[in-house]
Length: 433
Image (cartoon, rainbow, N blue to C red):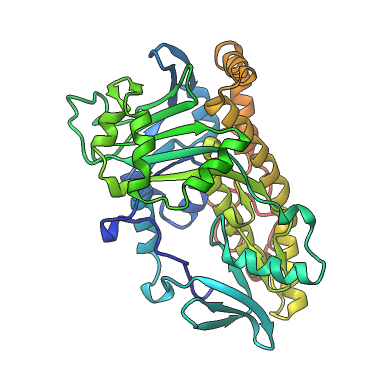
């Protein structure tokens, strides 16, 4: 891709007013290592090995992770970091002139120059391939689907709204006093998940570098309630957060109350969103392709949303690298190959995120029973097997030198690059060394 056109600036703290979030997971450590960025990521992160789960009375329900054998199999630590600092790291590797802000896509079209986008400021841009990586309410997807629907190509399922089952408030505190919050200055992250009793809320806190804590609170919604919330919350600014803050400020955490963390968080750094999910069937047409949340919005419970977006980018880059020409037929074939490679893995993770949401956020009788069984009675070996099944999938850019294999886990082979093999004079399937 020649240029990036975000519809709005990303949530980095350069302007002092944009929200800050956290990310954790290690499946994308492979591609960051391949790009020479993993060591820099470690400098802004804290490693984490376990995840403590409590009742609202601070009684321990169980621990996820905390298993050295799991680390030995995977070969990477889970890292926790501020999303704003991660954005800064990514932006430090991109030429500033390649990024154009506030370019909201209003429509797309095809012409003799390829694909064209028209932005809200009246500007137009042309290219051989248009990649819609513009999030849950993707303007590219909406424009693409409008074109396809007019010709009867769009499946009915792709016209349905996203599923809404939870509302989530998140924030990141300013630096805190280590004496008041034990463990936050330690070499590893401290994570807590608290499951409410007699309340629709679950909440969590986790430490990141600079003595800061990321926190979140999730409210489980019924279908009718989610529609009411949408109607009442057309505006999602700091003032509209106050009602939810008043409801959750007295919820307990191991170091005090959630309100303590909220008070230590600048109001403009608190964000509230619906937790939505939907796996779209249509990912591409002609010269346009969707990746990430634009085509598969996942619940954040399993931490797979950003992971799968990055894996999309890796596989799409591989498919573009294999292009014989930029003729429309060749482009369409490459985009079809991209979906064929990615869809089965995305579908598995989409379903896993729904199950994780039941485990971590669920408040129904069935979900409480499920949580009790998994956390109290399921052997560590079974938990480990379930986790490592997905972690064997570690796609790399096929046109770059492969990074060494980490951990004892057997890695799934990926589709080899014919072009790279020809250019390097290689035979056989390239594997991680």
